[in-house]
Image (cartoon, rainbow, N blue to C red):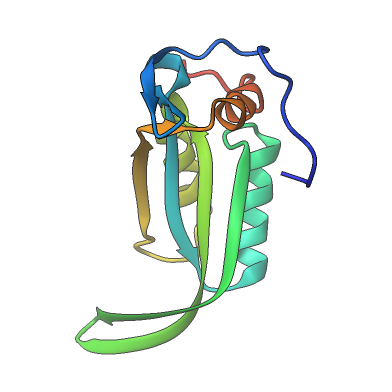
Length: 138
């Protein structure tokens, strides 16, 4: 999010079961997931990120270029430059996000790993919920 910009307080009611270290514990419709994936190029990562945000499957996508991956593939150890991507979405959209990532991915077997977020800043989580509202799970 841009500096000095915060979502409107109270605009989204988040189900909470308490707080941990000053952050809301998230459940139900307020549950958030992070999806990690990688791309071979910055352009491929940007294209995927823009599509996810424009479709409101993700509220925000962080792109981290400059990663090096070392992995076995087809009988050899490879070392390749890659671009890491972290997608922020509602847990209810996790499957749709993963499908969209895989559908347009240049790799045959892309890394698509989802992590549930157990707690987070109430205002920031509200912002994620607000910016993924139109992409409701069917």
